[in-house]
Image 1 (cartoon, helix red, strand yellow):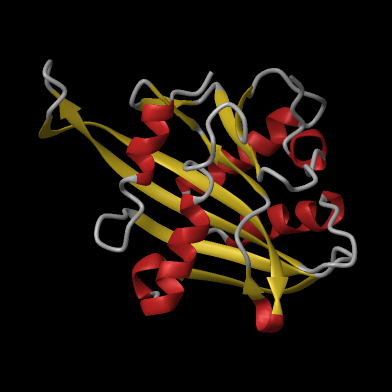
Image 2 (cartoon, one colour):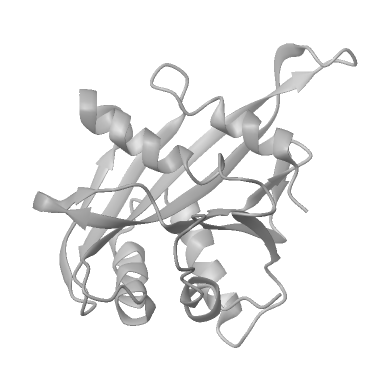
Length: 210
């Protein structure tokens, strides 16, 4: 089970003033699965509305309703190909999204497996390094770092005119954040309430089973 307070700790950091994102990469994919374009930029190079839009998309994943919209899956419990996809994510984290070959591999997998009938979509990947502050017994932050939590947020969004993304319909956070620490054994998977769930995300892309 995910802890709501852990997720809120992350979302409180996803603001224009406090965020610690290092990079964002993404691809624009048509409804037939063909990649129409991609980008890969230093997050600090984003300006004004573009930065706010990307923060809003990224924040939607950890801010989702915990254990309802955002569910925890055990990484080691999966279908064939499970180890390979999380090895890919580990490489994306280690490279800070700067390895274009790894990103292209992921986009091609998404284009092949993700179903978005009659609608183009974008897949956006965010790399973050959160320097977790130490907490005292009274719950107050002491400012000293306990651990650097390095993670990915991935969001799948519908596209409108000129590749303009809406809020995510699904996505994931990896590795999960548990007891104020990284949890490499779990991934948090998001499906927007009221949307038809994209079950192919966990079954075909992440190769997960509950």
